[in-house]
Structures are given as structure tokens and as C-alpha cells.
Length: 235
Image (cartoon, rainbow, N blue to C red; front, side):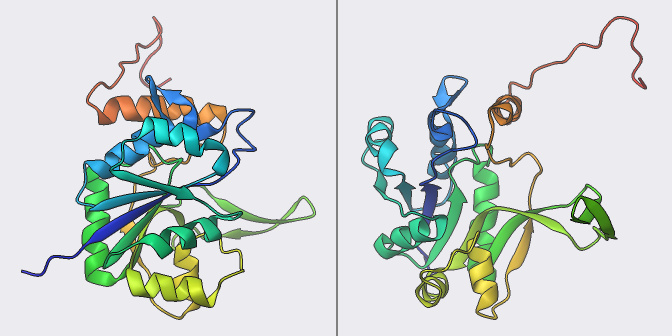
């Protein structure tokens, strides 16, 4: 049986400008940093090596949080540059790329992504769009877009290593918002792995509260919510 080596690149290069004065990846949930929740899920998965591409401002913090089994390198000025920096130090057959600010990802979902990546060579986790989508121009709705074929793209995204490296080399200097888009631009198919709406990306302080609940449930400590006296289930 052929054994493939799979690396994970975790992006941590952002400035967290929408979160506030503190880098969101260092914010704690149940006493553990957001980035630690994310990385530990990968440590418990079938990934062979983890590389964190970090904002220089938090590199020393990350080195204190993680042991030497996780490689911490300097990210770039854009997400695309950060991932490319990570790809340059990878030695693998396949690679998963994941947002450091998505701490609710489970080891089981990571393993599903690994399996699909090996089978299809290019994939992204994505959740079916559940909201009605409107196209707006100058504050006025111009049309309602059918959501039947719409998905909200998430991470992890997984690729055959040579494929994603070739995409980054070809589009170096551009500013793609995700790696799947780069592979699409090469004319290669990218497959969907049904994701969970719980796989949220921490962007604002309000997202921390949601992640606290989701992570409690993931660890088997789902909080119970009592209904106010006199309130029915159909209220």
C-alpha cells in the first residue's frame, strides 16, 4: 500500500483589524488560544506535519504556545503570499490549507478532507448557502440570486502538492482570496466536501461566543439551555 505524506499549512498572518486591539488568534476560548484549538485538531488528525505561517508580530507568542513539532514561519503581506511561503518549505505529496481563525474544525473532518484530496487532487470544504442572496447596486436590490447552486467556501482546502505550487508560481503577485480560486483559474476542477455551518471563521468578538458553544459540544460538554418559565417550544 502506497503511503502519502500530507502537510497542513495554517494561515496566521492577518492583522485582525476587524477584531480589535488584540490579535484574534491569541484570544482564549475555554482557557486555550484560538490558534491552539485549530492546530490541536490537526495534531489529532492524519496529517504528518503542520506549518503555521504567522504575522511577525505574534511569532514569539506562537513559539511559546507550541512545541517544536509544529513549524512556525513568517507569513507574507497577503494571505496568498503567506500560503506560498508555507508551500516553499513543504516536503509532501498533498497539502491541506486552513484558516487559523477556524478553530471549530474537527479531526474527523480533517481526515475526510485528506481522503478527498488524495482521491480528487483538489477540494474545498463548503457549506450550502441557506440565506436568500440579493444583488445590490447603489443601495437598491437589482435581483434575487437562486441559492440552489450556491455554497459558502470554507477551509480546509486540499491539493496535490505540485498542482497548488504550480498555481502559486503562475499567479505570484496576484491577490486571490482562496487557493481553490487559483486552481480554478488554471482550468482544473475543484471538488466540494460538504462542510458544517459550525466551521465558522473568527472575525469579530461576537464570533468567540459562538465558537465557545460549538467547541464545548465538540468536546462532549454541550451546554444546556433552559427555556424561560411559561415559554412554549413553539414561541
